[in-house]
Image (cartoon, rainbow, N blue to C red; front, side, top):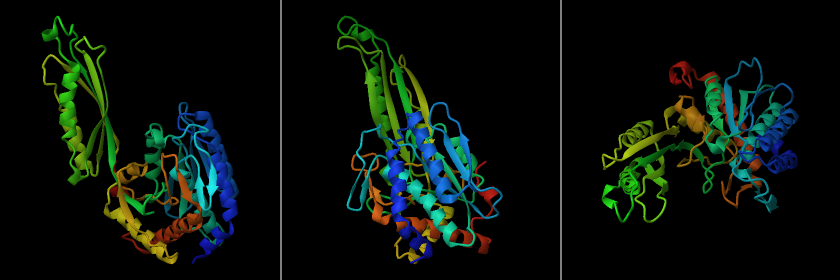
Length: 397
């Protein structure tokens, strides 16, 4: 095993106390006051575990919780961004917090407060076992990831462009504990049809049935799904009509699409935006966008994964990779061309489910994996000129 793993084992009780405090500080995305209380707790944890050398910049947000950035000033080492969020999907008091053997249950513990905390303790283990850090850690902790990163995306991209790599502390794949080296991108559209309402009995022929028109569009949209390409289009919500004896003048649908490549995203978006109503008297309005680009399994991301495998061998951990359908903030950084690896958090299950939990007995070893990855990245960055170079050329302007 490694010295940082021994350090983490020695401090397991303190880690458990930190995690309990962090999970008890519930932080549903839309409750700004609660999210900011959690942010203040995180400031305290970082100061206790990493010291006052990490300067905090707080980005005030009037609608959602404030975002937090921690970094050391004037470090010459390669900058590695630990990308985390501390908002959760659960209303306050919705889920009980408890231990069962080595399983820790609670709102947001798997997605992703345990991963956030493990990034802090991974660096703490290096600070306490090495003469000098192999990297310059940058912690960006956002408050609105669970609702689409509406206020944090620009900040994430701005900070990521100053870094050589991004470690996303989201949980690993639940079934396998694999790291996530590919994620689908996602987009959302709303289609609205304005028809003409008439009496369903007396003037049926004069009406333009908006529900009928929207039904034609539903079929066209669903047919865009291509499982071989990893593309799914889902009409998830439909609205329309007022009463049974009126030809409906309005109907709308909400559409979710998932894609594995930017090329496929462009195809789907073009197909959606070129849709037209069947009846020329109906009016169609289309609004939407690509909310998150895909995190693709590209060469730069694979270099990070290979380093994670090397780090795992030092800890007798077999590190494998998976492609998943859900998106994260790592989708943004990878699309910029910055090497990104995801799923570095703590194994468990139940993201967005009532059985949300982590395997606390895995915390020290998975946290040590992150620490060893930092060492491997720092060494490789210094000793291999061709590794993760030409940042200015890679990053999308």
